[in-house]
Amino acid sequence: MPHGLHWVESCHANPTDAEGSGAWLMVLGFEIDAVNSVQFSNHTGYTHWKGQVLNSDELHELYEGLKLNNVNKYDYVLTGYTRDKSFLAMVVDIVRELKQQNPRLVYVCDPVMGDKWNGEGSMYVPEDLLPVYKEKVVPVADIITPNQFEAELLSGRKIHSQEEALAVMDVLHSMGPDTVVITSSDLPSPRGNDYLIALGSQRMRSPDGSVVTERIRMEMRRVDAVFVGTGDLFAAMLLAWTHKHPNNLKVACEKTVSAMHHVLQRTIKCAKAQAGKGLKPNPAQLELRMVQSKKDIENPEIVVQATVL
Image 1 (cartoon, rainbow, N blue to C red):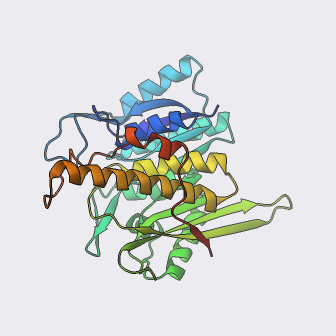
Image 2: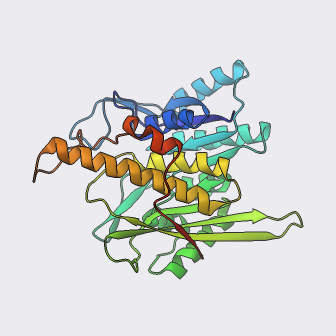
């Protein structure tokens, strides 16, 4: 059974977001040690939240406890939202140490920094995190899951076409990760404005030492709502399905995106029913319906097909 260390971005009563993604990795057969990078009353999609933020010293203390008991042996590390550069640097130090113990350890990083709204990108974490991601985090990561804006920040290049997106993924490969998935983009879809484009790229080494790169494109139907926790769920599902299909990015991404589709469709349907006809659902009604989606997460019906480029 694979064993993972998972930095949880928030802990609250409804197990969505990063806490939920850890829970659903357990559903998929992973043993998880979760660390709350922040412990909030609720996620930050609500108007108000209260709680505590873990600092780098406190993270180091927790890791030292694991090390003293000789239970710091992992197959995977998964990280997401972080606001403090010293905390992020401490994560890198821990990942490096864990990789010395287990060279086969896979580090999955969702480099959460910002997003685009109405075509304009903006960061929602301090800007001093960007150089830490570029210089320290991405070089030790094996799988990264940026959105288009984050991929542009990390590579220093803009994306206006699929060709430019593929070039950006090559830049990100050259920085370290063998698997890069741009989870969402504003590239135009041949199927119309109701669809989002996601792109993936995986480098594989053949026995003779040559490198083969697999590229895929996915087109996902947009959902007219703002959800919190989708990035955490995507990264966790991708970790699980790349574990089960290590050399088949197409299948891993199809299962990941299809599971996401089922969760979001169930969530928006339930949220609209709770809100009432013609009324916009509130953040509480838009909490991801994870428990109700257990079967879809364990064995998602493939509803999104990936195209090999």
